[in-house]
Amino acid sequence: MPRRRRSRPLSPPLLLLLFAAAGLTWLSRGWWWPTPPPPQLILVLGGDLDRERRAADLARQYGLPVVVSGGSNPEYAHWLFEQHQGLPPGQVQLDYRARDTLSNFTSLVDDLRRARIRHALLVTSTDHMDRALLVGRIVAGSRGIALTPVPVDCRDQCRPEGRRKVWGDGVRAGLWVVTGRDLRGWAAEHLPDWLGPDGAGRSGPDPAER
Image (cartoon, rainbow, N blue to C red; front, side, top):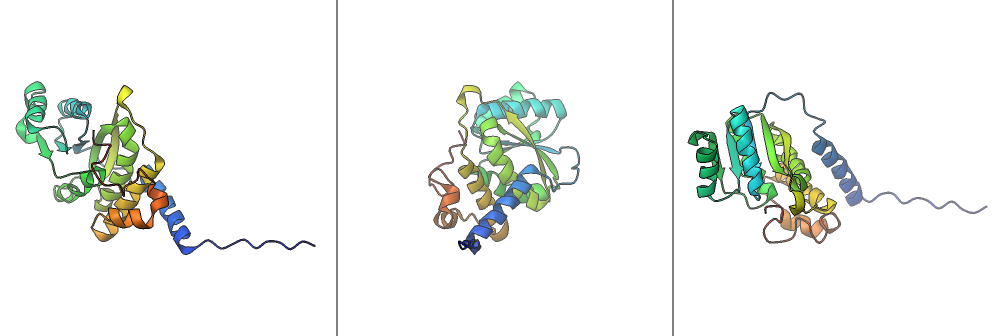
């Protein structure tokens, strides 16, 4: 009788990655959230003027305050929100601390928590939404803030993002929640199969922030 080949047990690093993947999938779907209160804020991620235009329309329609993270220059933003849409200056906050998708959230999330924000509308382009929503639900979720996506059609300018980049930034977000730091270099060195050549370990500006 031929011998049965014994299956190899999964190595601890692989088990860790599988558990992390399951956890990130769970977080990205928002299944763990109770029903949030009505939206209290519009959070728009900079990189495309259409995102700010959409946020301005929402702000006028619902009367919600707006925070623009890493958006257009102040002159254009003030014209769009105040002169074009007629919003009062105090309704719009411009924040330029972010350098990529992760810091869009990490630079603001504690300010939002102190302001007692528990639910925000997340405005970004359709091709950026998967990654932004995953990162946002991990980072903002760690502070008790729910996010509802408001995708903006990028039409012929869409550049679909690979799964490795989406999940790579999810790993970075999880590490930030645990350590309080962006461990981009560590993740690129220890998790290259997750991040890939276009992953979060690459230096330079985030290509999603167009």
